[in-house]
Image 1 (cartoon, rainbow, N blue to C red):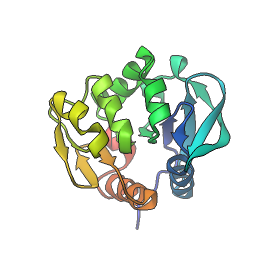
Image 2: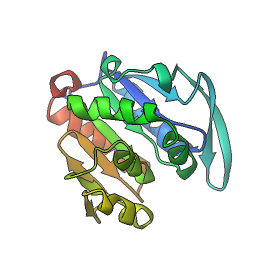
Image 3: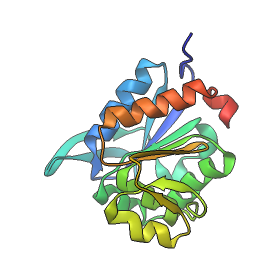
Image 4: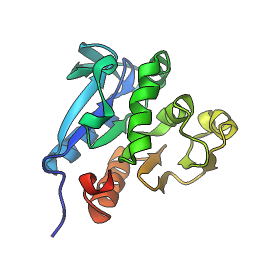
Length: 186
């Protein structure tokens, strides 16, 4: 019998310019497994995605980052998107929120260039991470081990880049449902 995410509350951290496909495919896959996903935005209100070479759809943020606590969630997902990552680096709340998950050993899944937030949150050192060419210099300077693999699992941290979003989220679901349920992992 396959374990599910029933009853698990999963935070998805975004700012304007996040990769729409990373969010929508992740939400769909996790909700199909029974998860309760919540979008955490820079502010309350709408967050605008990026798709291809243009702005995409707007999504309602369920909580503002400045009031969100890692203790209230079982897992963190951070979609990619250069614009989103640069905005998330503008506030210490990103460091606090991401750090809360990492310090508690809770599952964290990070798409593509969002791996740079681990550097910003001072949580990359000693970790093995899937890193694209654009982020490699910044990430390696932090003391992380940069892997050319498209998906890397380092304990309760999964990073992935340059691939099919469905393959990455399937790896996330497979890892966290086959090793233990989220509450046991925390």
